[in-house]
Every structure is written in C-alpha cells, then in structure tokens.
Image 1 (tube, rainbow, N blue to C red):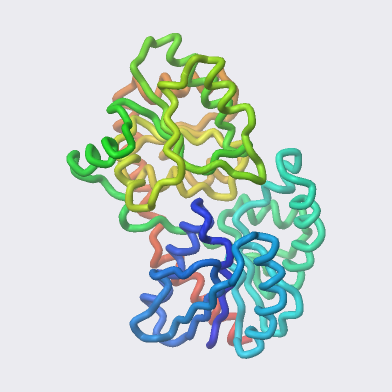
Image 2 (cartoon, rainbow, N blue to C red; image 1 turned 90 degrees about the vertical axis):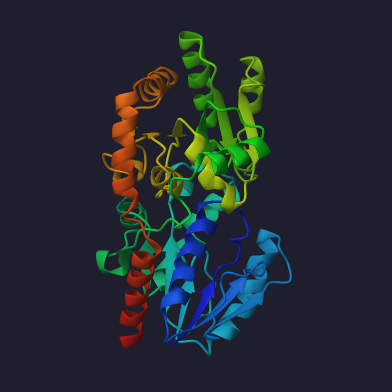
Length: 371
C-alpha cells in the first residue's frame, strides 16, 4: 500500500510530536512492504528509511491556520494516488476519496471548553465531527479517549480502535555523571520535583505552585520545582507567574522552556518525583517516561491518568491545594513509598514500547486495505 500521513504541526514540542515520531520511526524500521508519504511542517530526519519507502512533503507555511488551508488544497490531490491516509494529529481535510484513519489524542477541548478559544471549540463541535464520521477508523490513544468519543460524537464501537502511544528507548536510568552534566547546563539544583508538559491551563500548574508553597511552609525544605515546556498560546495560564511572584517563589520555581528530547531522560533521572496534576489528559506520556527513568510519579486521576499509570503512581482522586500538598509530602518524605513506586514504574513503563504500537497500527492499516 501507499500510505499518506498528515503529520503537519508536529514541529511543536509536546506529547503529540513525541507520540507521532515514536510511532512512525518504529513503523519505518519494521515495515518492508508499504510506502509512506509524510506531509510535514518541517523536515524530520528520523522519518526516513534506508529502503527508500518514505518521502516527505514540506508545507511552505508554518502558521497553523495557513497550514490547514494549504493541506486542504494539497492533500486531497496527493491522496488520489494513495491507498490510505492517516491523519496522525486529529485534524483532517475534506474531499478525500481514499479510506482514512484519524488519531485522536484527547477530547479536552469539548470536555473543558471554558479553557479554549471559541474557534477551537467550534471546530471540534462541527468540522471535527464531520472528519470522524467520514473516517474509516479512529485511533484513540486510551480507553478514556475512546469513551469520550462515544459519548460526545455517538460513534459506534467498531469504528474506534484503542492503540496506546509509546515512549522512546532513551528513557531509562542514566549514570550519575550524565545526569549531573544536564542539570548543570540548566542550572538546576540537586533537590527538585519536575513537571514536563506545555505551560497551559489544562496542566493545572498554578494549583501545583500553590501546593508546592504549602509543602515548603510545612517542611522548611530546600526543594525546587522545575517546569519543563513552553507556553501554550491557545490556552495560556495567565495566573501562573503572578502566583509565583505573590508567593515569593521566583528562586524555587525554575522554567526551562522547551527542552530537546535528548535532555529529558536526565531531568527525570535527577528528580525526586514527577508531578502531573492535569485536569484532563487523553493519555499523558510524561508520567510513563518518568517511570521508565526510575522517577516516582504523583498525579490526578482525571482523564486517562489512572488508566495509564495503573498502580505505579501515587494517584489523587481529588485535586486541591491541600490534597496535592499532602501528596507531595508523601512522595518526597516517604523513602519506602518512593522505592515501591520506582519498581512498579519500571514494570508499567515496559508496556509502552514503540514496536507494540507500530505493530498494532500496521495491523489496522492491513485490515483497512483488505476491505
């Protein structure tokens, strides 16, 4: 088969980029039979194949609205020569004659419309519904996302396939020297907890800072909070930095901005814990990456977090300043709990390998091709 892949927009750092690259890098290493045409916003060196069965077409614009206009004109024409098109980041185009697969990461825009721009909510309520109705199959990255799809769009069960995303093999325990070199590069002290993800309202970071402050007040601890990720323009957390200033935490809260993928394992390795207080997630790769590095995880049970983390994390059934502060105290001060979560985390992370995700995706392609 000749398979077109709409991966426009994955140049933005985040879980969508990571999951997409992990999947297709594994697919290209395994798939000897199919040919892939990737539509991208920038060249991606890892999406190449020594067999010569992968090519890239780069959009001439990067603005997210202009990219979708370009895609609407270009992809339907290109897809005429393809047996299948995979929209790997939920957004589709119209006028496709070939069967299509759409990957949906989460339904947060409709579960929490209050934190997103009106235009995004409108898109998901109208155009996105048409895209999914027209698709041959939909890949949901968790059972939670699959349930949201059924409830919100009234989609039939047989149209949805749950395929978990994967973490890269680089996430593993590292020698102390490697960790120390990366921490020095970012001026991060030895004792810290970490959050990895975009800086936006969904991530609940203002509440995290408030809980962190309460923990510090009670424990008089020399502890820092490291926030890894860039600000998300569509849903900015406008209260975060003022809260940090009001609480006098400018020195204890460290913003790294976006971090290259190769530095993330060391940041997880060096942390006392990874904190994940998001109000909703379709999956959440960061906690699994942290587990693979031996970093204990604490998070909120909202969305898919409980499904994904299982018993390998300290899971808070409710989220508030007090409950999160108490959870931080548990995971930081209780060495036996941290050791237990570390061991459970290694076991849990082993379930999310790129080869497994790629195999399941290839099987879905073959099913569609046979029909």
